[in-house]
Amino acid sequence: MNLIQKPDIRPANPNFSSGPCAKRPGWSVDTLNDALTGRSHRSAPGKAKLAEVIDRTRAILGVPDDYRVAIVPASDTGAVEMALWSFLGARGVDMLHWESFGSGWVTDVIKQLKLKGVRSLDAPYGKLPNLSAVDFSHDVVFTWNGTTSGVCVPDGDWIADDRQGLTICDATSAVFACDLPWDKLDVTTYSWQKVMGGEAAHGMLILSPRAVRRLESYTPAWPMPKIFRLTKGGKLIEGIFRGETINTPSMIAVEDAIDGLKWAEEIGGRKALIARAKANLAVIEAWVEKTAWVGFLAENADIRSRTSVCLMVVDDWFKGLDTDKRSAVAKALAKKLDAEGTAYDIGGYRDAPPGLRLWAGATVETADLEKLFPWLDWAYASVKAEMED
Ligand SMILES: Cc1ncc(COP(=O)(O)O)c(C=O)c1O
Image 1 (cartoon, rainbow, N blue to C red):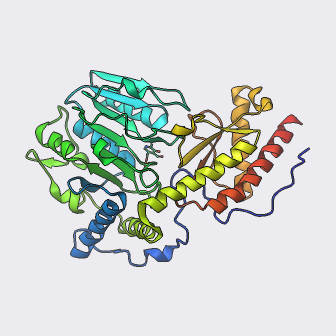
Image 2 (image 1 turned 120 degrees about the horizontal axis):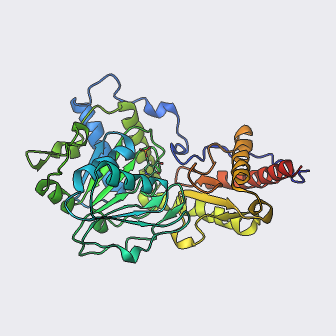
Image 3 (image 1 turned 180 degrees about the horizontal axis):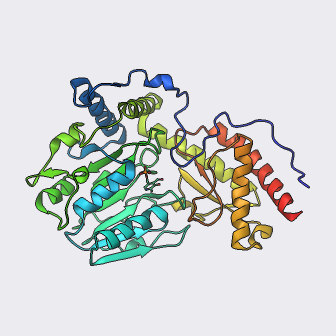
């Protein structure tokens, strides 16, 4: 029997998905009224919209003036693939991975690009690889925040200032939630659909001057599809970094990206975004601290994500179940909360250990997380009682 009474207050916004993520507070489709629909993205106003995304992004993220910022096809995946295909092969590569997305990039580099001299530095879900083992004479590919394990690098201090290789960072669920040390990052990617709650469609690619030098001095041995091409005749195509996109973007998605950036500016920019994510993680930590049945997949708080927060069930009853049953419990929890309209899409990622994942980036209201906790307690007690019957 479930002795916990069903709570009566629901989060105002039940969207806790880790991508596409919750829209910013106050968002409605009306914010897209100024979208340049039915017009060419190569018209003067079209180019101005695209340049606006780049300029506002640069200002909010504090990207140095000598770094290039581009809007590229196919979301973060497109941006990462473009980077792997364009930069790698010039020297050895260290691939750091500790969850599903990072591991996917390793597969690409080894099985698709068929690169030799690749070192794989990995760690199980919940942990980080040994960052002090990285060889910075190699190019280094890593994910700042492993979205499916809720483990992120603590900072950029482990990255050598005098590195010979490039750092290629998939920062899609970290940017706008962590202060990224641009001097340590040569190639950085992310998508609109994550921390800013934008529409899925396009990716962002940010290049350091060293990355540009690599592009202009090295030609990969493999063919380069048009969709990945950043150079022409050995020179960087500068237009791509002014908003002259390689192919046609959705001007509705562009408008939405601008809306998100304007909201960020209104609330106080990068610092305010980071503070919101930190506050969200803090209330989750306080709830976990006082709740016996739940724990973090990332036990070490220094490497715990403040965006994709991954939770495990830690009570003895659950630990005594076999893997299939644990998985069934986690799925039942997420389903129950979905059916109540209390929390959508909070099941852990399919490759991760069974558990829950709460998005806690800046677009999520702290008050909504606080309203969710009693529901999580209720759902767990209910599922446990049902399964014990
Ligand atoms: C770390 C990481 N990399 C890549 C991706 C893929 O992003 P997209 O679907 O925007 O291409 C995701 C999506 O969740 C992610 O979390």
